[in-house]
Image (cartoon, rainbow, N blue to C red; front, side, top):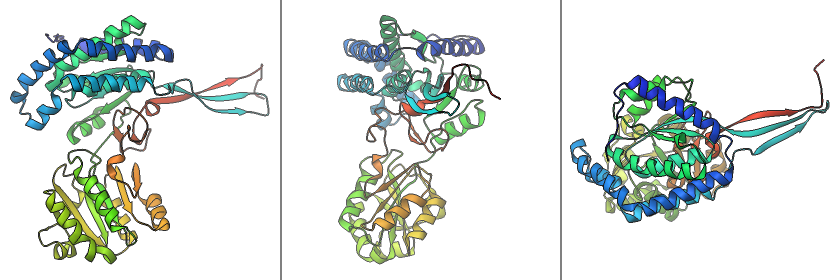
Length: 424
């Protein structure tokens, strides 16, 4: 498979954005039945074209060492029958989710006889910039179109052949069921300047979503002329309260940190109340040592877990994405909350406690997208929250926060019904 690249970048990017804008107006008024038929037909075509997809993927895998990808990154890039089946199944799951478009959010009857309806509508065109995993290509396309939007996909160069094969099949399904094929477009140039071109096109693009490293996200936030849903660091905390069940705390911390270390909702910091530190820290220190996790802690932590290393301010603010966790012993829940709000990234923070008042205070005062009470930080996820697929986890407050599913890719409008009323 060859990747066609438009020699004139301005012309190419403008054409893609214009096609997306035109397609978005049709998708916005497409019935739920048609969108679901597209999702199910796309899933079927993915299964039927396994060889076509794996042949394209083989090109990406062959080029991967030249891009400096690690073995773990190459494994995330690899597609096989099982992974293609997982992608197809995810599309079918999205088809089974309720369609948010057209939802009547609120109705108000005014004394003058006007009926005011608040109705959920699509955003329009989404520009999505993401990492190299090809399954994200299908997930993002599905969630954008199901929520009535068109999407421009700018994936990593490492997966461009795999993503192209997937998008071609999605377009084929779209044409079959009556959706505009341009509702889903993949940017076919690896030129990084293309990102800047699209970010300037607020006349065509309604929302930008970067999903990747901090450098990419800060670039998009700085350059975009349209709103951006951002996902910065995931410095997630687990606070073990004075009233914690310590066996539960150990289980939650090990799961939060070790179930998958390289993800944004993995725990990177633990706070332990001084009243239970003497008993709990040697226990969790041994458990982390067995998992190969290094603790970087304050003076009290290093006394109780001698193999720990002294922590710096940078450690408390770090997203390690690996086998390291910071630790601090605190004298009160106030001190724990202050620490989280100072060093945290507003992503996911957890408390382990049997004290309902402490749990309520923690939930009210910790300024994060998700607060977990006696549960692992790893649950901050669209699928685990029952949202189906997600396009990312936002650490913003406007207009979406936390896992971004179908509803987060919508806005609303007011529709007012009258019978000839005029304002006096």
